[in-house]
Image (cartoon, rainbow, N blue to C red; front, side, top):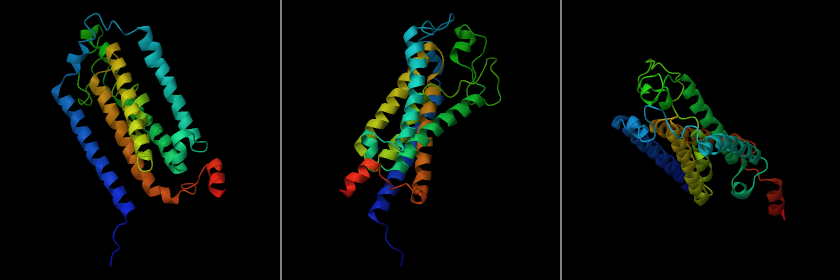
Length: 249
């Protein structure tokens, strides 16, 4: 007779099923934005035939672009270091889950970067209707060159926030409240950075939305992989030295 699934197995299955449903729902939502075709309409709210007035605005360029990008890499480095030297809420999850947080962020950044470098889609500020030379072409018009520089889809800069969404999956089993805060912060950061680039004319809204979906999906797939690999990781249940000493006392 086959053994009944344990409560922990049922919980894990429920979490993955919920994540799958959210992934599908988000995909439908992002695809719906593409179908509605509102990218150009929204872009015209911030630019005209002379370009985008806020393109070189100091705060958008040096804080929300350059500064945020550097901060994103600092956070990735801190997550990597936390695998061995955790702080705060990260001390309450095991090393394999902290490794998952770091890896999911790096993988999300890589996925977005690769997709962007393969894309022939140009940025809004490259289009002729905004003072550039390219013509508008959907990012789904594969193989169609728009006359611009391309490499603008999806939104690379928004991934400096969205890439950390994967941390939600690593936290949600043991620290659900922290996981929700982490998810909210990552989504908010990605949207703010994406909107900043929208105002500057660097990206369409669809670019930002697809980046968010790619980062979410990468984080979830990383969680699926780590869930199967975790029992084989030698340090999966290890505690930091300080916590181990407390546990032994």
